[in-house]
Image 1 (cartoon, helix red, strand yellow):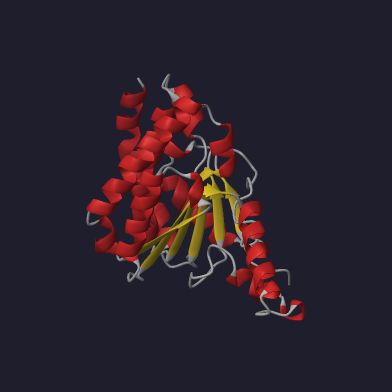
Image 2 (cartoon, rainbow, N blue to C red):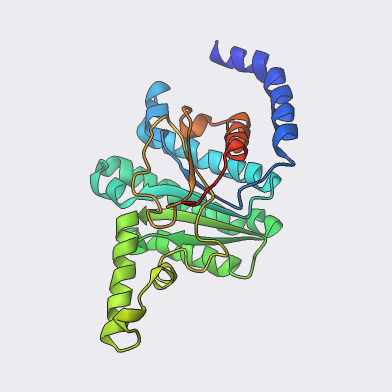
Amino acid sequence: MVKLKKVLLSPIYKLYEKLLYRQIKNGEIPRHVAVILDGNRRWARSQGLNAWEGHRAGAEKVKEFLEWCWELNIKIVTLYVLSIENIQRRPEKELDELFKLLDEKLDELLKEDFLKKHKVRIKFIGRKELLPKTIIEIMRKIEEKTRNYDRHYLNIALAYSGRAEITDAVKKIAMMVKEGKLSPDNIDEEVVSRMLYTSDLPQQEPDFLIRTSGECRISGFLLWQIAYSELHFIDPYWPEMRKIDFWRAIRDYQRRHRRFGG
């Protein structure tokens, strides 16, 4: 019944997509979009599936979403995939399956021409040492393979926590002070920004942050960087997000007046 409904509604969605695209294509497009990919497990439960099958559906949605972003020529995308808290609190079986999925999908990413075609530079942000060594090695190879691309930037947050990122930045600053390379009087926001995981991006701060699944919180994502980001929360779980959901989010962004505290 659900599949039949989708088939019947498909032509309507296509028309609506075109309408939305005409509305947004000439408006201001965010340069940096950050997304909290939430709702994989709840989507799986709603389908009578195991949690890790929800993660697989979510992983398969990522490539589709990136195509939507690049259709609008969005320069930078940062995805919150796995938090430190997820690693610490999820059941062992689920984590094992999730790590197998990461290993598989990252290996596919390394081998296919998707990144070369779009000239995407990839960086993995987070405490990577918390991940299995096989995954760390694939991440290293992907970063090396894409380091000279600059048409698009994709940041993937794995074993990430905003508090951990700021803590790591403070440790770097403290070490520089200890070694006499930095005076405490010279510590300012710019110095802190240079110590963050995102320091090598052409724009660290997301213009727009989206969270799926209906939850209205940021869960420690890019705590420093999103100080003036526009936030948008949508109801669909990540695996069921549609292009029209994204187009509508962009339309909402374009209707806002960003003041940056002014």
